[in-house]
Image 1 (tube, rainbow, N blue to C red):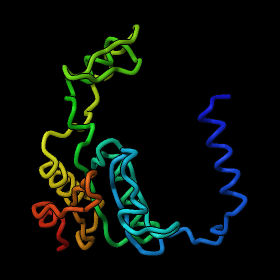
Image 2 (cartoon, rainbow, N blue to C red; image 1 turned 120 degrees about the horizontal axis):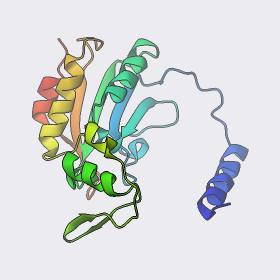
Image 3 (tube, rainbow, N blue to C red; image 1 turned 90 degrees about the horizontal axis):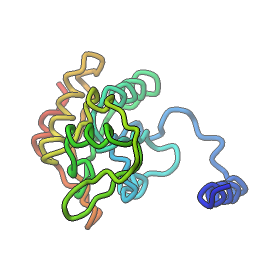
Image 4 (spheres, rainbow, N blue to C red; image 1 turned 180 degrees about the horizontal axis):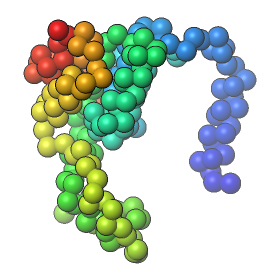
Length: 192
């Protein structure tokens, strides 16, 4: 058994021994959802003041409005009653450090973990790789404010998203812990 697996199972055993949240209802108590990045430095429960059962938190690389993220938001509203949505990207995001072409190139050489140094990303693994990375839109980020605004607008335009749901756009600063409003995203997400 790996050290990580051992640690996670031990932590879960301690958590389960003190667990008191088994009574929480399925719908989120505060009626909102957050779409944010999977980055380990972000703790939505802390930066948004959440307790277990308060809100849906949907996480992916970059906090991007992918088809799957929008699917989750639609389910969150339609079946579980969320009435407000937040799209929260963050400063110093790893999605700013590569392009679609670079990711496809790295994957074509090897499926092993690449390395990042002062000269950029390098594939240090042994093949085989796969060319399937060329057919995926990796949703990389060049400009945080623009990406938040694009994601809010993409969600707003989706045919399964009710026009009355407000969609808010923010950038979380990993150095200060502050949520910074993106005015163009807030305008794009305004309900009608």
